[in-house]
Structures are given as C-alpha cells and as structure tokens.
Image (cartoon, rainbow, N blue to C red; front, side, top):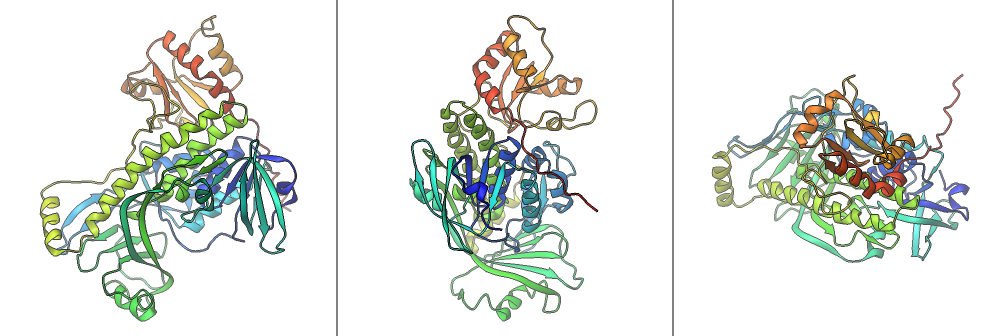
Length: 514
C-alpha cells in the first residue's frame, strides 16, 4: 500500500521508524502497545519472501510474549535440535545442546524459524494498532534534524510524489547500509572479520536422510555450515576460498558440485544463492539529537552465534519504553542510557560470534590440528549468553542491569503475562503509610505492577532481595532488602516509572465475518 494521508499530515508523530524488517516491526508493535503515534517508512512494497535469519533465543521469545505474539511465532517455528562443530575426522569439538521446551525465560532456549513467517506475524501484529501507520513503497529521501522535531522527506515509489513527515524521534532500523547511520556519523568499530561466504537455501522435494542438528564442518579445505531450518527447508553456508570465482560459483553446476555430499539435482529446489561478507562492526554513535539507530544499522555480526536478529530485537525492547516515557514528558536524558547500556551488551555477542567463527574459518592445516588438540582436551559447550547491560537506567545492586528469568506464579501463569509492559515490583506487600504513599500512588494508577506471590520467594532469595523492581524490558532496575531502601528506590525512579506506563492503545476493530 502507499503512504496513508494520516501519516503525511501536518501533525507531528511521536516516532518515525525507518525500515520494516524484524527490528522495525517489533519496535512498531512495542510502541503501538504503548499508545504512541507511530509511522513506519519502508521502501519495499512487500516483505521479501526469502529466508535470511533463522535463529532466536528465549529472551527474544519473551519479547514476542510481551507484544502478544510469542505463541503464533512458535507455532510457525521449531525447537533447535542442537549444534555441533566437527573436525575432518568427525570428532566433536564443540556443542550446543538441544533446546528444552521451556528455559529460564519461560520459552525455549533456542528456536529455528523461517524469516518470512516471522515477519508475517510481526506485521499482522502491527495491524492491531490504529495509532501505527505503515507506509510501504516509500523511500526516505532526506532527514532534517530540527529543534522541536525531525523533518523527513519521503517519496512514494509508485506515484513519485514527495511529501513530508514530521516526528519527534526517528529510529533507523534500515539495515547494514543505513541512511540514518550515515546522517548520525561517527563511524564503526571494526572487530576484525570480513569473510565472504556463499549461502544456499534449498527446499527438499524428495526424502533424503539429512541431519536434524546444525553442523559446523571445520574443514580447513572448505569450511561449511549446514542447517535444518523448518519443514523441508535446508541451508548450506560455504566459505569462499582463494581461487573461487564469485560469478561462477553461484551457477547451478557449481552449486550442485558443492552440495553433492548431501543432495543431488532432483532432491531439492534451490530457492536462493547469494554471496555475503560476514562483518563484525558496531556503530560508535547510536544517537544524535533526534536520530537513533537499532538493529543492523547499529551493529553487524557474523552468524556463528545466531544473534544478529536477536540483538536487534533487544534494541527495540530497550528503546521502546524509554521513548514512551520521553514522549510523555520524562527527561530526554533517559535516552542517553540506550547506547550506554546496549553497546557493551551487544559487543559481547559480537566478540563471541567472532571467536566461534575463528574456529570454523581456520584454513591452515597446522593451526587446525592445534585447534583440534586443544578443543578435544576440553569439554566446551555453547550456552546462551546473558551479559549485564552497560551503565545506564538502573541502580547499583549486584542484580541491577541483569536480565532475570521469568518464573511461573502459583496459578501456573508466566510473570510477564500478569504485568504487561510496565515497571514491576516483586515482593511482599507493604502497609499504606505516609512513608509508602508515593509507592502506592504508582500502584493505584497502574504505573507500577505489584506481584506478591509465594512462588517468587525462592527466586527473590536467589537474588538476595526482599523486593526487586523490573523494568518493562525485564532487566532489573534495582533491588531492596528493607522498606526504607525500597521507598527510596521508588522515589528516585518515580517519574520514569509513571511516564513509562502504557496508555490505552487504539486497536483496530476486528473484521466482521459473514
């Protein structure tokens, strides 16, 4: 569809999202849920119907839960059967165990999916909100960062007409070649990986015995990754070696020679072939004035940890409640915490992905032999990372800035389903006194959800706290061990807690079925 008139009116919207991939669509759902007025600007007329990202983790599933879409996403996905790194002799160098049905976040630890399926669910989710306008086939021609808002010049790709959009904040979810990043400037930190790989996606049309797990073939003569995606979909990622001609290696005859150890013509339909250069880059500056970066616009990482898409979804979750609070008159300095928290966090994922990539990308036989000796002598296992946030909008306790697991409450429900996208106080109740008056005011107005449940006692004991305050993105704001400390904690953050609370979003009416 083309850009609706409502998005192009003279009114200033709260947030303009440039780019409608998984990060932009997740952010649109989160902001729509918060009741903000949002416009999404996407240059393509429809979602790309080709596989790209294939993995997300339990934290990302929990974010999908927060926008009411986790069940539908999981219905179209499958649990990871695990991953193994094999050397040439067939020895296991490294392993990630199969995903259990439920992990610490209340969802499977590792999930395999087909990106067009995920994008369809996320975009259908955005369709629930009248306060979110989606403008497809719309090219952003320029952005002017003004004092009170940003002015965005857009062109309808079909009619070639140009119009203006005004937004208080602009979030660039526009990928690795981000226009918004170029406007912000500051360059990127290069973490030292630039390796070309051939990616082949195939759809099986005949039964062939293939592994269910993901396999990293650590062969110095030709490193290869194999992935069973969903259903009949399979992927091979094949590292380009010296002497490979990028133009000829993507032709059918070359592809089938490379795939011969697994399948032959007639076994599968080749859906996509593309050469990608795996990069490890992080933007030095994630925000300038009213322009902000998220997803691949802010960071690029090789796929060996399966965390590229996950990191973009985490950006959206961290950013959404802060934008909501600021749009409802919280101090704009809160937004300074976005980069300070997210950049160190994502850096650990990029570094780990680079380290894992160095294992499989080893092409010197002598170095590979030493790698095998060292790794076979150990007992390494890949586990889901959950590093603390960098310094920012959280307190000074040991648990502050960490992601906490999602416990089940006494009635069997998940914690987040009982609270919604707001700050949450977990712990015993307190009497209504003059001392606790401000705390109770936040509870009474719905800005602060208070969960007091016997099922949380062991969880709180593990954290060494009587009370824990969770942010809307489910990272710990801070914890308290006595009533005075809790009251001081709430007083210190009361303005942010109040303004971050969602207002009633405008849901589109359900269609009438005849």
